[in-house]
Structure formats: C-alpha cells, structure tokens
Image (cartoon, rainbow, N blue to C red):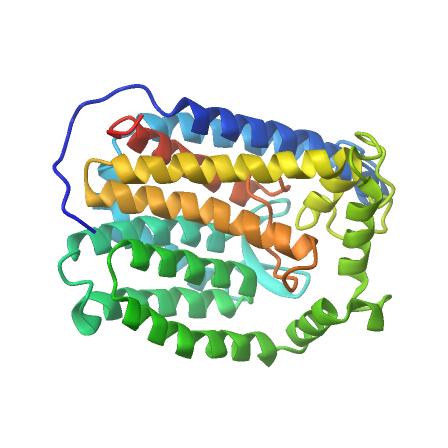
Amino acid sequence: MPVRRKSHEKHAPDVMIFLITLALLSLGVVMVFSASSVSAYEIFRDTYYFIKRQLAWAAIGLVAMCVTMEVDYRVWKKLAWPALLFSLVLLVAVLIPGVGVMIRGSRRWLGVGSLTFQPSEVAKIVMVFFMASFLSDRSTKMHRFVEGLLPPLVVLGVVFGLIMLEPDFGTGGAIVGITMLMLFAAGASISHLAALGAMGIPALVAVAMAAPYRVRRFLAFLHPWEDPLGSGFHIIQSLLALGSGGIFGVGLGRSRQKFLYLPMQHTDFIFAIIGEELGFVGATAVVVLYFLFAWRGLRVAIGAPDSFGSLLAVGITTMIVFQAAINIGVVSGTFPITGITLPLISFGGSSLVTTLAAIGVLLNISKYSSIR
C-alpha cells in the first residue's frame, strides 16, 4: 500500500453510498415484514413481532451511522487495540455456560431474554478496524512473512478459533475472507497469500467437515434431492421460491413459501422471498445495489488521504459485499449453507446496527476522498 499524503480538505459525504444504504435498508424493512408475518403469528401470535424489532434496530443503527459519519475516521485507529481486546473478552464470555445464551445448539449470544446480541458480529467489524490500523503501520514490511504477515494471522487465528467454539462457521469464514482481501490490499506478497490459500483452504474444509451437520449441509448442497425432506429441504424450498417468482414475481406480500415451507425466511433466506415476490427484476435490482455499493466504496478507498483510511474503506466495503455474495450464493444453491445473513436486509439487530455504524465510518472517509 503506497504511503499517502494526508489531506484535511473536507467535503460532503458520498451521496450514492448513503442512498444505496437507505434503499437496501428500506427494502429490508418491507421484506422482513412480508417474510416474517406468518411465522411471527404462528410462534408469538403477533404478526408484527419481528418487524417491530427490526424497526427499532434500524432506528438505533441509523443513529449510530449518523454519529460515526461525523467522527473523524482517524480516531478509530487509536481505539483499534482496545476494541480488539474488548471483543476478545466478549468472545470468551459468550462461551461460558450461564453467561452465553444457547439458541438452536449454538452459544453465540449475550444478553437477557429477547434482548441479545452476537459478539461475533462485533468481532467482525472490530477485526476490520484492527487490521486497517495494524497493516497501515507496517506497509513497508508486508512483503515479509514474519514481520508483516505472521502477526495479523496470529490475531486472526485467535478470533477465528473463539468463534468456531460457539460454533459459527459462517461468521468465522467471513472474517477469514475479509482479512485475506485486506492483506492483499495492504501489499502482502502474492506468493505468501497463495501459499496460505494452498494450506488454509484444506484446513477450512477439514474444519467444516469436522461436524456432522456441516457434512450434511455440504452433501445437501451437492445433491439436495437425495434427501428432500431432510438435509436438502432448505435448498429445495429456496430454489422453489426463486423459480416461482418468474420475471416480475408473484407480488409483494403474496409469497407462498413463507407459509412455513421455507425455513429462516426472514433471516438467512430472505433473498429467496425477494425473488419469489419481486421476481428476477427485484432480485437483480438487489444485486445491482450491492455492485454499486462495492464500486463507490472502492472509489472511496482509492481516494482516501492515508493508508489507514484506504484499508478501512476496503475492509468495510468488503465486509458488506462479501457477505452479500455468500448469502445470495447460498440461497441460489451456488454455495453450501453457511448461516450468513444478507447485510441491511435480513432480520437481526447485531448485524444491522454494526453494519450501519460501519457504513457511517465509510461515509466519513468519503468526506476526505480525493475522488468524487
């Protein structure tokens, strides 16, 4: 990563990033209500149970975005190490019986009753901040393995290991992918990264295959119709939803798959409901919005006045777009089921608030970008 001359020239934030964020968030609110209304009534006898919570989290997230948009992004460089330590404490705490909340066989949440959050979501954005800070200070050493590449890999290994103990392979894998892309952007040696990939990919596959349920998910991804009522059920119902939408969809609110056929229809598989109700046109519009977000985010990174701002913009943009690509790939049967939500659209407070706060930081960096 080249050394950049610092500039204090300040202008308005990137309007397109702001508008894309509002568009995805608004669509998410509408689709969470549409996708969750049936299951909300079935479970809680309240059609509005999930949408009320999503609206509350969206309001908190927008406030967080407005705050971080006004805070000079350079402040986060000083807070990177304390934030990492705090995140590690949370990741350890969630593993303690009686402290971490167990839901569906995984201990991923902290909180009381329905007021819970996922420390792994906090760890994801904290890792972006930490890596941007750490790598920007070692830009001249990134071509060396021991001095440049090894220290961030050790930190990544610790964070990934703690998340896998929950277990949460989807979030852990996302953090690995985001970190690798940030290392590439920071100027790490291609040969070193290739060697890590050659060793790391088999290791990730081994970790994925270590648990029986992950093996079933992978086999279901390859041959879902061999067990249509078991391991292949999610993928088959998702593909049925996407296929039945046609070009223009069956109409907003008229999904049939949300009537308890498609599991996790308002979280991991909400894109399938989008495809069913809004059709190929609506699904394509969502994909285009993420492409536009990636384009504008990388423009901010290129025009950032220093390497920390550039790497931070790369990390935030990658975090959002990478998760969106994985989620859409899972829903369309391109990737095995990973448990990654669709950023800004899926139901979930921890993810929504941290994502909006991170976008606020990206908008602040855009105020100093030399590319408009």
